[in-house]
Amino acid sequence: MPVRAFAALLCVGLLFGARALAQAPTPAQSPQELFRDVLLKDPSTTSGVKRLLRTNAGFVSPTPVFADLTGDGKSDAVVTVENGGAAGAVAAYVLSAEGSDSGALRVVFRSQSLYRGRVRMSGPTVTVVLPVYARGDDVCCPRHAIERDYAWDATAKTFTRRATRTVRTGPGAAGSRSRG
Image (cartoon, rainbow, N blue to C red; front, side, top):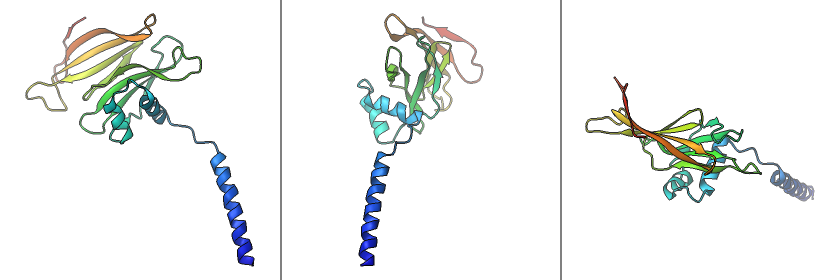
C-alpha cells in the first residue's frame, strides 16, 4: 500500500511538473536562430540556401553587422549564410523591419549565388565582394575581385546597384577599374 501511494503521488507530481514545463516561457532566440527562421520562411530564399540551413550543411554567420541602411532610424542586419568549408559565404542578406508597424523582419536585399563572398558596409552602402579566379590563382588568393555597391532606394523600397568595380587583390593591389 505505501508503495502504491508513493507511485500515485509520483505520477501526480510528474503530471503537474510536465504541465509547468509545458507552460514555461521558451528561452529567447539568438539573433542567429531568428535570422535563420526569417530566411527559411522567406519565399524568395533559394532552395539551395534553404537546404543548407535545414540540413545544417550551412549556417547563418554568428557575426551579423547592424546599421541603419534603410534610413528609417532602426538598425538593419547584414547576415551571411556560410557553408563552413572552402566556399565560405554563399549568400548575403539585409534584414529590416522598414515599413513594418509590428517590427517584423523581412529580407530587403539578397545575393544568393556567392562563392567565398564577403560583405562590407560604408555608411548606407553595402558592398558585396566576389573573388575572380584566373589560371594559377590559389583558392585563398585570387588576383582580382568584383565589388558591387548597393544602396537603399527609399522610393522603390529596395536596394539598387550603384557601382561595380574590378579590383586587384593580394600583393601590390592598389588600382581598380570602375564600371559605373
